[in-house]
Length: 444
Image (cartoon, rainbow, N blue to C red; front, side, top):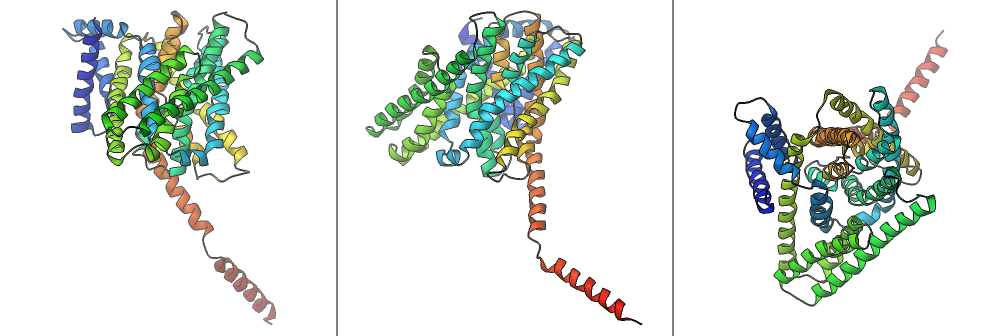
């Protein structure tokens, strides 16, 4: 199938599904589109007369799409840039240590916890999966997806500080997760010998290299923006920054996600205030909001359609369903333990661990990494399990995240009321009790 035909089909489906969702379902766009695409895919799999041809055509189209390349080496650059462009750097700086801890120690901890627990689960189910591949699964499922998270948080009503934590973590933790995934892949595929100093060097090369390249590319774009006042040219510069810096980072073998996030933060903050007129800011925001919405729509339609090419067996589905609580537990521990330590030095919102756990949505990045694994039975299993976790994450966690946030807010209000009750009442009770005791003693 020709590339243009595939793009036309995906955009058409995204437009039709968006209309259906907006007109009837009224769900958040990402959730509604994936749900409709998933239902359509399941409908094509039913033994309906005349549907076999459609299912076959859909499978041919999906098999011709390199999901890994499409997401990790295409869409992700624009989606991350669009997300970072609207994040306030001052707000991010106030939560820098929390974000850094969750994006590093949290990802590494979740990788080990998930990998170890699913290794035991697969063994109990009679599935022979090497431990290193279980760790690979832990690495690909550990990061929260910024694409899914930011879309849901817009309407969840989460406290500002908590929203910054979740958004900041989701923007940076995929870079750490990809590096972890690459290191574990080298071990699993029996490539070069992996040593602790080599792993640390790779992490520093990827992270610091991405940071420096993002600052350099963003700085050049900032200087260009300062010397022109034409919104068409300025929008084109940001488009080149998002795609060019990501491509340059990949060619230099440094973290492309970190590069484009840093560049987006610089332009969205310093560039917005020091190099753009008001009309340019408005046009820039409109343009990148449209890019974000359009690519999001296509991505989540693709995720919903991917079920047509999965290896669905009862054993694999059971493994996927049982993995969901293990991933949630690992998320709670990997986020909760660092926060418990940091509580000694700073305060946190009520229910922060609960919201971080339930708000840790997985999305296209996890599916793309799973599909990048070498072909075989182990890959089929891990792709199916990943898909189960992602679907539950977006449909169940995404739809109920607002309720969880509101429940935690009510709990915070109750606790605040208790702490703010006047101290006179207990004192008066104590005085009344003492007076009654004295009177009783004085009675004959």
